[in-house]
Image (cartoon, rainbow, N blue to C red; front, side, top):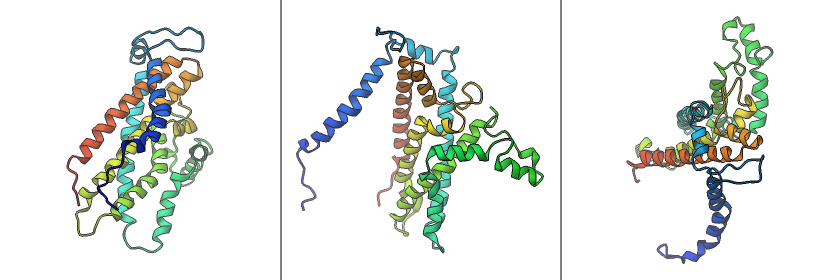
Length: 275
């Protein structure tokens, strides 16, 4: 087979049409709706310009806190998942007994349903009867028995910790694949940078879109927007019929996603080493 053969452009036409019809066009229409007063309370649709975005970034509203929570969640979980995932990947590419068993155990949380994880940890972290606090009290560590999910001081950090526990195994698996493709005679980290760039962008996209873990654990509480992020707020805006504000929030999230994604790819691959 001639590896240099150039195939006609129309080979991708079918996939391109499907992508445009079901992804690009609906996305552009959604962004267009963010400049209107679209809601469930009227049949009229009027152009309002930047009013929805002014509302989002208004000091009187709570949306800035929601955006801040989203960025903090993304930044913290991305870094820690990558660090823990890399450490586990380095450990689990060494020769040891029951290697595949250990890999399977570490990967298992990532395949569990988020709803199931939320239910289990809500039970474990119950301040009165949860397994964690009961255990801490039984060994005399009452001071460490905290209201993990019911206090505004600890809830956000707890949610991030549970998400890191669930997602690290998947990142570990991707990095193991990257490590196994590198010859032992080469320096590991520079050659692993493309894989780390991939896992970083994946984590950033997930963090900016996170909804299910937070909703399963705290439903956005305790208190107003303590753990709320962009997607929980989008869900609530659509649930209350404020469609235009919801689409405006989605548009803001999309812009963040594109800017951060491009920045991370450029930073992490600019000195990429070619084997």
